[in-house]
Length: 323
Image (tube, rainbow, N blue to C red; front, side):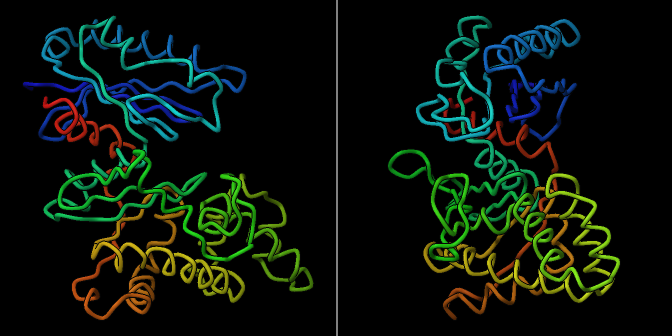
């Protein structure tokens, strides 16, 4: 396992530390949750504890580490977090520098969904393709774009935020502060909210979907319940899925038309939940795309699960640190 990577996944509710090899192996992932009252400084110390633990249980492999890659749940610029909507304090921490000072390992950081896109491109659903669009339909709607085998960065380093393409001008308020963003309609949380609202509006319909969802909130499984009922042919559930596919097709066709990218990979809980309808989604994206860009268009489900980010640090470190 030469030229090992120290891989770190920093999310709002959990963090993972692992060793990754260049051929796509994830070794001894160390997971930890974050208590709601803990800030970024607590997370930093928790990360150091688990890195030290990795060094204890894998001394030989740890000695082969050449670089550290970090996927962070929020915008990143110049290897530092710009903003975290979930955990206070990250703007004051230069984690890459601290890891280099403490362990003698050069480190780099990127947005979590861009890092996931790199992982799926190198080892998962996008392997062998030069370009792909990646969307993560989870609590929010993150994204990343790979063009000609490189992650698109943009002028400020913030490119790839697919969830903030406007699909309904003046529509629902998005967590970013704008209105009508894709995230406000098609994140896992937003799909759950729309499902709850729909059963309230159609409350007179005495069907199992209304009964099931009325007992839940958007953060308590309304989205998965919706997908289960849609698979069974429930009319209201299917209507909501159809609406979701339309929003997704409208936004995702932008990368087809602007960048001529013909592979779209979707992950996250809601992305996987929608996978039975990917054939329909593909047709709708094609319907919004220029005829010249439709040939070979594919929509695929992400393959690597939580390992997509960890493995994405391998190409990230190769690109940023040359190791």
